[in-house]
Amino acid sequence: MYPDNIKTLKETSEFAVYLETDDNCEVWKKFRSKNYNYDFRLSDGMFARWGKTKKSIDDPEMSPFGPEILDLEITDICHGVDGKHCQYCYKSNTPNGKNMSIETFKTVIEKINFNSQLSQVAFGLGSTASENSDLWVMCDYLRKNHIVPNGTVAQLDDYNSKMIALKFGGCAVSYHGSFDVLADTVQKLTYWKNENDSKLAQINIHFMIAEETYNEALRLFELVKSDNRFDSVNAIVLLGLKQCGRAKNGFTKLSYDKFENLIKTAFTKDIGLGFDSCQANKFSNVVSKMANEKLIKRELLDILQQMAEPCEASCFSAYSNVDGFYYHCSFLEQSEKLNGFNLLAGNFKDYWEEKTGDVNEWRLRLNESKRSCPEFDV
Image (cartoon, rainbow, N blue to C red; front, top):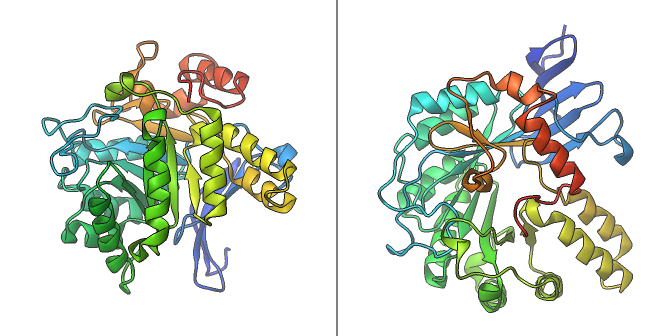
């Protein structure tokens, strides 16, 4: 018999998944097995994973029980910012796209969440969060299944800002050249985030870095630091260039020296900084150098390297496109070398657990590259 503060979601001879409410009334989703374990706090996304013990030498290389996180494209419709589309959209989305149906959505979630292990879903949205009218129903479905919805937008009206605050755990606002649009959207989210019934724990800014956007990144640092409309922003998340979609032409990978300078500038200005997992190993190298130069303390270095999670594709994370086809990550959908797996027709559990074939081959390639992307030079 379990205590009143524990609710079992699934239990087998190999593992258990349960919800536990702590003394502060915080709800945790916990996964327990012999060599793979995690704790996930639903209120703010606090997450810790370990193997047999919490020593780093026991860290698992993948989740044998299914993905922890799903990137889910529920629309490939996008209206851009003030009607102008970003030049580096890796999907090349336009207003003439399609939405994922609620039926397809539920099937995808059920297939991916085969052991009740899924913790978060990051929605692939258009710029305004209004493209798929089923979005809020989808959020309710996820919450009912103890999964936290998140998403990325670029230009919100007041209604969708309010709905995001009511439904999402975290929201990122992409900066595409208009500082006024960015500030207005962040300000709307901040207002609704501060309401009593808000579930929104975190607001971030997304910015794609390349040689062509480097000076704009430095300008963004200055603007965010000097404008109190951004006081509630958790971090500026720098996204590495993937040369696919519209970004195939016209953009160049940012040099290592400039990448390093962005990190040092952010530390100097006390700006919260984040990265996509594609750049985690490169980030670790920079902060190691900063510790050697005594620019940061060794204790902070240990924390930063612990938090820097390299590529998780098909090891801890999953991606489905609007049609319900699975790829290792959203960028690899563009690759001619890889085929998608049909989640609507196939057995995803068998696919994830297979010891040979496409997913196993990918994991081997990823481990050989020390979990740096083997497809794109990020």
